[in-house]
Length: 475
Image 1 (cartoon, one colour):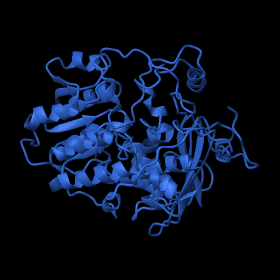
Image 2 (tube, rainbow, N blue to C red):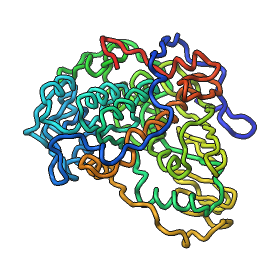
Image 3 (cartoon, helix red, strand yellow):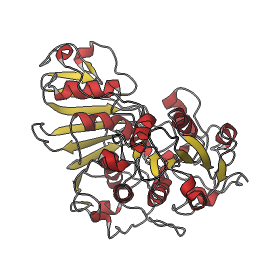
Image 4 (cartoon, helix red, strand yellow):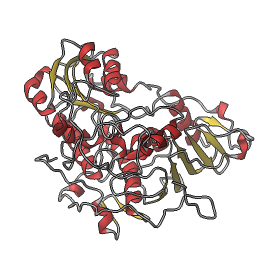
């Protein structure tokens, strides 16, 4: 569908919106009781009491072990974990993990796994679809397990507050697998910006070529036979019941749009599972949720960001059940100490900001981050030619380079410093990303009140901060 643009070239929200009535959601009564400020968990309390010592191999259970769960469990094993239990609702999708760790005990339901394994496991890695991140991580935290979760931490702000608070109470080591903010590139970016190489930063532009899955569409009709290897009801979990659908038919526009984005075959032809859950609000968080925690992680650290004051979005047509095919989201952050207010602009669906003239005609990469300061510009950690306030070569390397997501988590479990994207850090990061989705769905500029957990003056948008848990599930 062609984009509508205003005179400045920005994507403009079409007046026509998808049909269908949005499910009403009640704001959970305790949503505001979570956190008012970010707290840093002391190193001496992140390692839970038990048998994990600086030289031991923690026993790890994986939940969601197909897809990205499989390589991330391999990474966990590489840094010293023993993979002893595997849980997945789809035996066919999990086969690679079952073959890799044949002695690991197998489960379909993570609740049964936690009840059965008990003290035989020390930590849990969660790589399920977004809509079940909260129920898995909360159950593991309440069982006293160290937890690592793929991004985004949760699918809703209500869930995010609950997970962060549970992690604080548990006093365990946590990590979100966003791009590490302690890598060489991330640390150098932070050092340059905080040393004032490009002066005060007032704009950040972030773009991605995602989505690599279908979205911006309506739900397909009918029902397909369920595979015997898949427990569809467990896969749905707390999401509303819906009929199982297998693959999109060849030639369907949902697949054609992804082939256009990726320049090749789609990663998955599935309607929902595997992989393509990302394109449905009931299960995923769209391109912004999938990639925002990666690309916002370093700007959050470099610029000491926390909560935006307002968020505004423009996009292609908005449907009730799926994110739009492309969007631009603008987040306004207030001044922080001696740092001025900053505008962060997110682009997806192949959209990008204008290439800065300092690139001298070289196009922007497919994905990236552009920092614009009063005295210069940076593309990632690269200081662009031209004006600058300070020679970047004069800036010393002062930040600790860690950069390995799973090694950081292991260090925290063994009593070292907290992981770089622990849940306390990831909470506000996740909230900012999810607020972008709220603005997309609300269709108007929203003003955020983090202390009261509400959208100021907009009761309907406030309902989008929560999800209705169904099928007997609860937080």
